[in-house]
Length: 470
Image 1 (cartoon, helix red, strand yellow):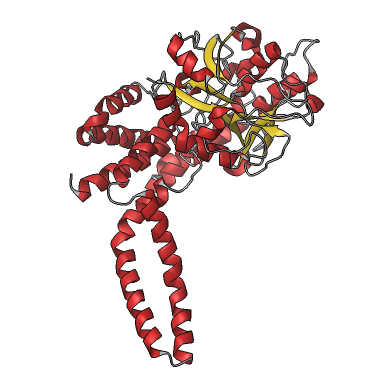
Image 2: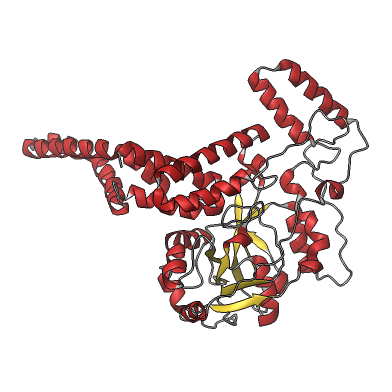
Protein backbone atom coordinates (compact mmCIF):
# COMPACT_ATOMS: atom_id res chain seq x y z
CA UNK A 1 0.00 0.00 0.00
CA UNK A 2 1.34 3.41 -0.94
CA UNK A 3 1.47 6.32 1.51
CA UNK A 4 -1.06 8.14 -0.65
CA UNK A 5 -3.52 5.23 -0.39
CA UNK A 6 -3.01 5.01 3.36
CA UNK A 7 -3.59 8.73 3.78
CA UNK A 8 -6.73 8.55 1.67
CA UNK A 9 -8.02 5.77 3.92
CA UNK A 10 -7.16 7.80 7.03
CA UNK A 11 -8.92 10.89 5.69
CA UNK A 12 -12.08 8.94 4.91
CA UNK A 13 -12.09 7.16 8.28
CA UNK A 14 -11.72 10.45 10.14
CA UNK A 15 -14.54 11.99 8.12
CA UNK A 16 -16.78 8.99 8.76
CA UNK A 17 -16.18 9.22 12.52
CA UNK A 18 -17.99 12.58 12.37
CA UNK A 19 -20.61 11.62 9.78
CA UNK A 20 -21.49 8.07 10.89
CA UNK A 21 -21.10 8.68 14.62
CA UNK A 22 -22.95 5.47 15.48
CA UNK A 23 -19.62 3.72 14.90
CA UNK A 24 -17.26 6.64 15.57
CA UNK A 25 -15.18 4.50 17.94
CA UNK A 26 -14.66 1.75 15.36
CA UNK A 27 -13.68 4.23 12.65
CA UNK A 28 -11.12 5.79 15.01
CA UNK A 29 -9.89 2.32 15.97
CA UNK A 30 -9.37 1.40 12.32
CA UNK A 31 -7.69 4.73 11.61
CA UNK A 32 -5.31 4.10 14.52
CA UNK A 33 -4.42 0.72 13.01
CA UNK A 34 -3.34 2.37 9.76
CA UNK A 35 -1.60 5.35 11.32
CA UNK A 36 0.52 3.16 13.59
CA UNK A 37 2.19 1.80 10.47
CA UNK A 38 3.93 5.16 10.02
CA UNK A 39 3.55 6.93 13.39
CA UNK A 40 2.80 5.06 16.59
CA UNK A 41 1.13 6.73 19.54
CA UNK A 42 4.43 6.65 21.46
CA UNK A 43 6.20 8.23 18.50
CA UNK A 44 3.54 10.94 18.38
CA UNK A 45 4.09 11.75 22.05
CA UNK A 46 7.84 11.84 21.38
CA UNK A 47 7.15 14.26 18.51
CA UNK A 48 5.22 16.60 20.81
CA UNK A 49 8.01 16.45 23.36
CA UNK A 50 10.61 17.18 20.68
CA UNK A 51 8.57 20.15 19.48
CA UNK A 52 8.61 21.61 22.99
CA UNK A 53 12.35 21.01 23.27
CA UNK A 54 12.99 22.69 19.95
CA UNK A 55 10.95 25.68 21.08
CA UNK A 56 13.29 26.09 24.03
CA UNK A 57 16.49 25.93 21.94
CA UNK A 58 16.61 29.64 20.89
CA UNK A 59 16.81 30.75 24.52
CA UNK A 60 19.46 28.13 25.27
CA UNK A 61 21.48 29.28 22.26
CA UNK A 62 21.09 32.93 23.27
CA UNK A 63 22.39 32.16 26.78
CA UNK A 64 25.33 30.25 25.36
CA UNK A 65 26.18 33.22 23.10
CA UNK A 66 26.08 35.63 26.08
CA UNK A 67 28.47 33.31 27.90
CA UNK A 68 30.67 33.03 24.75
CA UNK A 69 30.31 29.25 24.98
CA UNK A 70 30.69 28.64 21.27
CA UNK A 71 31.05 24.88 21.60
CA UNK A 72 27.59 24.74 23.15
CA UNK A 73 26.27 27.09 20.47
CA UNK A 74 27.60 24.74 17.79
CA UNK A 75 26.08 21.68 19.46
CA UNK A 76 22.71 23.34 19.99
CA UNK A 77 22.47 24.60 16.41
CA UNK A 78 23.27 21.11 15.15
CA UNK A 79 20.57 19.77 17.47
CA UNK A 80 18.13 22.37 16.12
CA UNK A 81 18.89 21.30 12.56
CA UNK A 82 18.26 17.62 13.34
CA UNK A 83 15.06 18.39 15.20
CA UNK A 84 13.80 20.62 12.41
CA UNK A 85 14.41 17.85 9.87
CA UNK A 86 12.68 15.22 12.02
CA UNK A 87 9.67 17.45 12.72
CA UNK A 88 9.28 18.23 9.03
CA UNK A 89 9.51 14.55 8.17
CA UNK A 90 6.70 13.73 10.58
CA UNK A 91 4.54 16.76 9.81
CA UNK A 92 2.05 15.09 7.47
CA UNK A 93 1.55 12.11 9.77
CA UNK A 94 1.10 14.39 12.77
CA UNK A 95 -1.91 16.05 11.12
CA UNK A 96 -3.64 12.67 11.26
CA UNK A 97 -2.29 11.86 14.72
CA UNK A 98 -3.83 15.01 16.19
CA UNK A 99 -7.24 13.83 15.00
CA UNK A 100 -6.82 10.17 15.96
CA UNK A 101 -4.63 9.97 19.07
CA UNK A 102 -5.87 13.09 20.86
CA UNK A 103 -9.12 12.81 22.85
CA UNK A 104 -12.06 14.38 21.03
CA UNK A 105 -15.76 14.78 21.72
CA UNK A 106 -17.96 12.47 19.73
CA UNK A 107 -19.70 14.52 17.06
CA UNK A 108 -23.48 14.95 17.09
CA UNK A 109 -24.98 12.58 14.54
CA UNK A 110 -26.12 14.92 11.75
CA UNK A 111 -28.53 12.29 10.39
CA UNK A 112 -30.53 11.93 13.60
CA UNK A 113 -33.90 13.56 12.85
CA UNK A 114 -33.82 17.27 13.58
CA UNK A 115 -30.18 17.32 14.73
CA UNK A 116 -28.59 18.64 11.53
CA UNK A 117 -29.31 22.23 12.53
CA UNK A 118 -27.32 21.76 15.75
CA UNK A 119 -24.20 21.02 13.69
CA UNK A 120 -24.80 23.92 11.33
CA UNK A 121 -26.11 22.00 8.32
CA UNK A 122 -28.98 23.01 6.09
CA UNK A 123 -31.05 20.23 4.56
CA UNK A 124 -29.20 20.72 1.27
CA UNK A 125 -25.82 20.35 2.94
CA UNK A 126 -27.04 17.32 4.85
CA UNK A 127 -27.86 15.66 1.55
CA UNK A 128 -24.38 16.50 0.28
CA UNK A 129 -22.86 14.99 3.43
CA UNK A 130 -24.93 11.87 2.84
CA UNK A 131 -23.57 11.63 -0.71
CA UNK A 132 -19.96 12.03 0.49
CA UNK A 133 -20.50 9.44 3.22
CA UNK A 134 -21.72 6.90 0.68
CA UNK A 135 -18.73 7.60 -1.56
CA UNK A 136 -16.28 7.18 1.33
CA UNK A 137 -17.83 3.86 2.31
CA UNK A 138 -17.63 2.67 -1.28
CA UNK A 139 -13.96 3.68 -1.56
CA UNK A 140 -13.06 2.07 1.74
CA UNK A 141 -14.76 -1.19 0.78
CA UNK A 142 -12.43 -1.23 -2.24
CA UNK A 143 -9.20 -0.23 -0.45
CA UNK A 144 -9.60 -1.84 2.99
CA UNK A 145 -10.44 -5.43 2.13
CA UNK A 146 -10.21 -6.75 5.71
CA UNK A 147 -13.12 -4.54 6.75
CA UNK A 148 -15.02 -4.73 3.46
CA UNK A 149 -17.98 -6.51 5.04
CA UNK A 150 -18.35 -3.78 7.67
CA UNK A 151 -18.25 -0.97 5.10
CA UNK A 152 -20.75 -2.73 2.86
CA UNK A 153 -23.15 -3.19 5.73
CA UNK A 154 -22.89 0.52 6.54
CA UNK A 155 -23.48 1.25 2.85
CA UNK A 156 -26.72 -0.72 2.97
CA UNK A 157 -27.86 1.37 5.92
CA UNK A 158 -27.01 4.70 4.28
CA UNK A 159 -28.46 3.67 0.94
CA UNK A 160 -31.80 3.05 2.63
CA UNK A 161 -31.65 6.38 4.50
CA UNK A 162 -34.13 8.81 3.00
CA UNK A 163 -33.49 12.48 3.67
CA UNK A 164 -36.82 14.05 2.84
CA UNK A 165 -37.67 17.64 3.53
CA UNK A 166 -41.10 19.18 3.32
CA UNK A 167 -42.48 20.09 -0.07
CA UNK A 168 -41.80 23.78 0.17
CA UNK A 169 -43.86 24.75 -2.87
CA UNK A 170 -46.93 22.72 -1.89
CA UNK A 171 -49.61 25.19 -0.81
CA UNK A 172 -51.42 22.48 1.20
CA UNK A 173 -48.27 21.36 3.05
CA UNK A 174 -47.27 23.10 6.28
CA UNK A 175 -43.56 23.89 6.19
CA UNK A 176 -41.72 24.84 9.41
CA UNK A 177 -40.19 28.30 9.27
CA UNK A 178 -36.72 26.94 10.03
CA UNK A 179 -36.84 24.89 6.79
CA UNK A 180 -37.84 27.96 4.80
CA UNK A 181 -34.98 29.92 6.39
CA UNK A 182 -32.51 27.19 5.42
CA UNK A 183 -33.73 27.32 1.84
CA UNK A 184 -33.45 31.11 1.86
CA UNK A 185 -29.80 30.95 2.99
CA UNK A 186 -28.98 28.50 0.20
CA UNK A 187 -30.82 30.65 -2.37
CA UNK A 188 -28.76 33.67 -1.30
CA UNK A 189 -25.49 31.73 -1.49
CA UNK A 190 -26.34 30.52 -5.00
CA UNK A 191 -27.42 33.98 -6.12
CA UNK A 192 -30.99 32.83 -6.85
CA UNK A 193 -32.77 36.08 -5.94
CA UNK A 194 -36.08 35.07 -7.54
CA UNK A 195 -36.23 31.98 -5.34
CA UNK A 196 -35.25 34.06 -2.30
CA UNK A 197 -38.14 36.45 -2.98
CA UNK A 198 -40.61 33.54 -3.13
CA UNK A 199 -39.32 32.14 0.16
CA UNK A 200 -39.50 35.53 1.87
CA UNK A 201 -43.15 35.85 0.81
CA UNK A 202 -43.93 32.37 2.14
CA UNK A 203 -42.28 33.15 5.49
CA UNK A 204 -44.28 36.38 5.79
CA UNK A 205 -47.49 34.50 4.95
CA UNK A 206 -46.70 31.95 7.63
CA UNK A 207 -46.24 34.60 10.31
CA UNK A 208 -49.78 35.91 9.65
CA UNK A 209 -51.38 32.46 9.47
CA UNK A 210 -53.34 31.39 12.53
CA UNK A 211 -54.07 27.95 11.13
CA UNK A 212 -50.77 26.29 11.95
CA UNK A 213 -50.94 22.71 13.22
CA UNK A 214 -50.25 21.99 16.84
CA UNK A 215 -46.93 20.64 18.04
CA UNK A 216 -48.59 17.32 18.84
CA UNK A 217 -49.88 16.99 15.26
CA UNK A 218 -46.47 17.84 13.82
CA UNK A 219 -44.54 15.39 15.96
CA UNK A 220 -46.80 12.45 16.62
CA UNK A 221 -45.25 10.25 13.91
CA UNK A 222 -41.59 10.97 14.58
CA UNK A 223 -40.91 8.58 17.48
CA UNK A 224 -41.46 4.90 16.80
CA UNK A 225 -40.54 2.16 19.27
CA UNK A 226 -38.60 -0.97 18.28
CA UNK A 227 -40.21 -4.25 19.29
CA UNK A 228 -37.51 -5.24 21.80
CA UNK A 229 -33.78 -5.60 22.41
CA UNK A 230 -33.83 -9.20 23.56
CA UNK A 231 -30.68 -11.29 23.16
CA UNK A 232 -29.60 -14.69 24.46
CA UNK A 233 -26.09 -14.46 25.91
CA UNK A 234 -24.22 -17.76 25.97
CA UNK A 235 -23.36 -19.30 29.35
CA UNK A 236 -19.67 -18.77 28.55
CA UNK A 237 -20.18 -15.03 28.03
CA UNK A 238 -22.18 -14.71 31.26
CA UNK A 239 -19.46 -16.59 33.14
CA UNK A 240 -16.69 -14.38 31.75
CA UNK A 241 -18.73 -11.26 32.48
CA UNK A 242 -19.21 -12.33 36.10
CA UNK A 243 -15.44 -12.32 36.58
CA UNK A 244 -15.55 -8.57 35.95
CA UNK A 245 -18.55 -7.89 38.16
CA UNK A 246 -21.11 -7.86 35.32
CA UNK A 247 -24.41 -9.74 35.64
CA UNK A 248 -26.92 -10.66 33.00
CA UNK A 249 -30.19 -8.79 33.38
CA UNK A 250 -33.37 -8.81 31.32
CA UNK A 251 -35.36 -5.61 31.67
CA UNK A 252 -39.12 -5.90 31.36
CA UNK A 253 -41.07 -3.98 28.72
CA UNK A 254 -42.49 -0.62 29.90
CA UNK A 255 -43.04 1.14 26.59
CA UNK A 256 -46.84 1.20 26.75
CA UNK A 257 -46.71 3.01 30.07
CA UNK A 258 -44.53 5.80 28.63
CA UNK A 259 -45.66 5.78 24.97
CA UNK A 260 -48.26 8.56 25.40
CA UNK A 261 -45.51 10.85 26.71
CA UNK A 262 -42.63 9.95 24.39
CA UNK A 263 -43.73 12.17 21.50
CA UNK A 264 -43.13 15.29 23.58
CA UNK A 265 -39.37 14.62 23.55
CA UNK A 266 -39.05 15.45 19.87
CA UNK A 267 -39.96 18.97 19.02
CA UNK A 268 -37.13 20.98 20.64
CA UNK A 269 -34.52 19.21 18.54
CA UNK A 270 -36.37 19.96 15.33
CA UNK A 271 -36.70 23.62 16.33
CA UNK A 272 -39.61 23.77 13.94
CA UNK A 273 -42.38 24.22 16.48
CA UNK A 274 -42.28 27.93 17.22
CA UNK A 275 -44.51 30.24 19.16
CA UNK A 276 -45.89 33.48 17.76
CA UNK A 277 -42.80 35.16 19.21
CA UNK A 278 -39.59 34.37 17.29
CA UNK A 279 -37.18 31.83 18.80
CA UNK A 280 -39.68 30.78 21.49
CA UNK A 281 -40.44 27.08 21.48
CA UNK A 282 -43.82 25.72 22.47
CA UNK A 283 -43.36 23.26 25.32
CA UNK A 284 -46.68 21.41 25.29
CA UNK A 285 -48.79 20.79 28.34
CA UNK A 286 -47.89 17.22 29.21
CA UNK A 287 -50.88 15.18 30.47
CA UNK A 288 -49.39 13.67 33.62
CA UNK A 289 -51.42 11.37 35.81
CA UNK A 290 -52.19 12.74 39.25
CA UNK A 291 -49.99 10.12 40.89
CA UNK A 292 -46.90 10.83 38.74
CA UNK A 293 -43.91 11.57 41.05
CA UNK A 294 -42.65 15.14 40.79
CA UNK A 295 -39.11 13.97 39.99
CA UNK A 296 -40.44 11.87 37.09
CA UNK A 297 -42.37 14.89 35.80
CA UNK A 298 -39.15 16.91 35.91
CA UNK A 299 -37.27 14.18 34.03
CA UNK A 300 -39.84 14.00 31.24
CA UNK A 301 -40.02 17.78 30.99
CA UNK A 302 -36.22 17.87 30.52
CA UNK A 303 -36.67 15.71 27.42
CA UNK A 304 -39.29 18.20 26.22
CA UNK A 305 -36.92 21.14 26.62
CA UNK A 306 -33.47 19.81 25.66
CA UNK A 307 -32.16 17.53 22.93
CA UNK A 308 -30.27 14.52 24.31
CA UNK A 309 -27.58 12.41 22.64
CA UNK A 310 -26.03 9.13 23.71
CA UNK A 311 -22.31 8.29 23.77
CA UNK A 312 -22.48 7.51 20.04
CA UNK A 313 -23.60 11.06 19.30
CA UNK A 314 -27.03 9.79 18.19
CA UNK A 315 -30.32 11.30 19.32
CA UNK A 316 -31.24 9.65 22.63
CA UNK A 317 -34.87 8.66 23.12
CA UNK A 318 -35.77 6.12 25.83
CA UNK A 319 -37.50 3.16 24.20
CA UNK A 320 -38.48 1.34 27.42
CA UNK A 321 -38.81 -2.01 25.61
CA UNK A 322 -37.72 -5.41 26.88
CA UNK A 323 -33.93 -5.68 26.77
CA UNK A 324 -31.05 -7.99 27.67
CA UNK A 325 -27.75 -6.55 28.90
CA UNK A 326 -24.77 -7.14 31.15
CA UNK A 327 -24.58 -4.68 34.04
CA UNK A 328 -22.67 -3.94 37.22
CA UNK A 329 -25.54 -4.51 39.66
CA UNK A 330 -23.78 -3.90 42.98
CA UNK A 331 -25.87 -2.23 45.71
CA UNK A 332 -25.37 1.48 46.24
CA UNK A 333 -23.13 2.07 49.27
CA UNK A 334 -24.36 4.17 52.15
CA UNK A 335 -22.53 7.34 53.14
CA UNK A 336 -19.04 6.37 54.26
CA UNK A 337 -19.40 2.93 52.70
CA UNK A 338 -16.88 1.26 50.42
CA UNK A 339 -17.38 1.39 46.66
CA UNK A 340 -16.83 -1.97 44.95
CA UNK A 341 -13.82 -1.98 42.64
CA UNK A 342 -14.10 -5.02 40.38
CA UNK A 343 -11.80 -6.13 37.58
CA UNK A 344 -13.53 -3.97 34.98
CA UNK A 345 -12.24 -0.73 36.48
CA UNK A 346 -8.70 -2.09 36.44
CA UNK A 347 -9.06 -3.21 32.82
CA UNK A 348 -10.14 0.30 31.86
CA UNK A 349 -7.19 1.83 33.69
CA UNK A 350 -9.41 3.53 36.28
CA UNK A 351 -8.26 3.49 39.89
CA UNK A 352 -11.59 4.10 41.58
CA UNK A 353 -15.32 4.22 41.03
CA UNK A 354 -15.87 7.76 42.29
CA UNK A 355 -13.96 11.03 41.77
CA UNK A 356 -14.05 10.46 38.01
CA UNK A 357 -15.16 13.15 35.60
CA UNK A 358 -16.94 12.22 32.39
CA UNK A 359 -14.05 13.16 30.11
CA UNK A 360 -11.80 10.68 31.93
CA UNK A 361 -14.43 7.95 31.76
CA UNK A 362 -15.14 8.44 28.06
CA UNK A 363 -11.41 8.45 27.23
CA UNK A 364 -11.00 5.13 29.06
CA UNK A 365 -14.01 3.61 27.28
CA UNK A 366 -12.73 4.79 23.89
CA UNK A 367 -9.25 3.36 24.55
CA UNK A 368 -10.25 0.01 26.07
CA UNK A 369 -14.01 -0.56 25.74
CA UNK A 370 -14.07 -2.42 22.44
CA UNK A 371 -11.04 -4.49 23.42
CA UNK A 372 -12.85 -5.58 26.57
CA UNK A 373 -16.01 -6.48 24.69
CA UNK A 374 -14.17 -8.49 22.05
CA UNK A 375 -11.23 -10.09 23.88
CA UNK A 376 -12.59 -10.57 27.41
CA UNK A 377 -16.27 -11.26 26.70
CA UNK A 378 -15.99 -12.74 23.20
CA UNK A 379 -18.69 -10.43 21.81
CA UNK A 380 -18.64 -8.50 18.55
CA UNK A 381 -17.99 -4.75 19.18
CA UNK A 382 -20.04 -4.00 16.07
CA UNK A 383 -23.05 -5.34 17.98
CA UNK A 384 -22.20 -4.54 21.61
CA UNK A 385 -20.74 -1.56 23.41
CA UNK A 386 -19.46 -0.87 26.93
CA UNK A 387 -21.04 2.32 28.29
CA UNK A 388 -22.01 4.10 31.48
CA UNK A 389 -25.41 2.70 32.39
CA UNK A 390 -28.11 4.49 30.32
CA UNK A 391 -30.61 6.57 32.31
CA UNK A 392 -33.65 4.51 31.30
CA UNK A 393 -31.97 1.24 32.27
CA UNK A 394 -30.82 2.68 35.61
CA UNK A 395 -34.44 3.67 36.28
CA UNK A 396 -35.96 0.28 35.49
CA UNK A 397 -33.24 -1.91 37.01
CA UNK A 398 -32.91 0.45 39.97
CA UNK A 399 -36.59 0.11 40.81
CA UNK A 400 -35.93 -3.63 41.15
CA UNK A 401 -32.60 -3.37 42.99
CA UNK A 402 -33.38 -0.51 45.33
CA UNK A 403 -31.09 2.07 43.78
CA UNK A 404 -31.75 5.78 44.22
CA UNK A 405 -31.95 5.60 48.00
CA UNK A 406 -28.51 7.05 48.79
CA UNK A 407 -27.01 10.52 48.59
CA UNK A 408 -25.04 9.73 45.47
CA UNK A 409 -25.30 10.38 41.76
CA UNK A 410 -24.50 7.84 39.07
CA UNK A 411 -22.94 8.67 35.69
CA UNK A 412 -25.44 7.94 32.89
CA UNK A 413 -24.59 7.36 29.25
CA UNK A 414 -25.02 10.43 27.07
CA UNK A 415 -25.35 14.19 27.17
CA UNK A 416 -27.85 17.01 27.31
CA UNK A 417 -27.21 19.45 24.45
CA UNK A 418 -27.44 23.08 25.50
CA UNK A 419 -27.61 26.31 23.53
CA UNK A 420 -24.66 26.74 21.19
CA UNK A 421 -23.98 22.99 21.13
CA UNK A 422 -22.54 22.89 24.67
CA UNK A 423 -22.99 19.56 26.44
CA UNK A 424 -23.65 18.50 29.98
CA UNK A 425 -23.05 14.90 31.01
CA UNK A 426 -26.08 12.98 32.23
CA UNK A 427 -26.18 11.77 35.82
CA UNK A 428 -28.82 11.15 38.48
CA UNK A 429 -30.27 8.89 41.16
CA UNK A 430 -29.64 11.00 44.28
CA UNK A 431 -32.26 10.42 46.97
CA UNK A 432 -32.18 14.14 47.88
CA UNK A 433 -33.36 15.19 44.42
CA UNK A 434 -35.92 12.60 43.46
CA UNK A 435 -34.12 9.31 43.98
CA UNK A 436 -34.46 6.82 41.14
CA UNK A 437 -36.23 9.45 38.96
CA UNK A 438 -33.54 12.09 39.46
CA UNK A 439 -31.88 13.25 36.22
CA UNK A 440 -29.56 16.20 35.65
CA UNK A 441 -26.72 17.45 33.49
CA UNK A 442 -23.30 18.08 35.02
CA UNK A 443 -20.10 19.58 33.70
CA UNK A 444 -18.00 17.04 31.84
CA UNK A 445 -14.95 17.87 33.95
CA UNK A 446 -16.79 17.73 37.28
CA UNK A 447 -15.87 14.96 39.71
CA UNK A 448 -16.92 14.18 43.26
CA UNK A 449 -16.70 11.34 45.72
CA UNK A 450 -20.50 11.28 45.62
CA UNK A 451 -20.70 10.57 41.87
CA UNK A 452 -20.10 6.92 41.02
CA UNK A 453 -19.63 4.99 37.81
CA UNK A 454 -21.68 1.92 36.94
CA UNK A 455 -20.94 0.25 33.60
CA UNK A 456 -23.11 -1.85 31.31
CA UNK A 457 -22.58 -3.81 28.10
CA UNK A 458 -25.53 -2.99 25.84
CA UNK A 459 -26.52 -3.88 22.31
CA UNK A 460 -25.47 -1.15 19.92
CA UNK A 461 -28.85 -1.08 18.26
CA UNK A 462 -30.33 0.51 21.39
CA UNK A 463 -28.12 3.51 20.54
CA UNK A 464 -29.72 3.90 17.10
CA UNK A 465 -32.67 6.07 16.15
CA UNK A 466 -32.90 6.18 12.35
CA UNK A 467 -31.11 2.91 11.58
CA UNK A 468 -31.19 -0.71 12.58
CA UNK A 469 -27.43 -0.97 12.90
CA UNK A 470 -25.70 -4.25 12.16
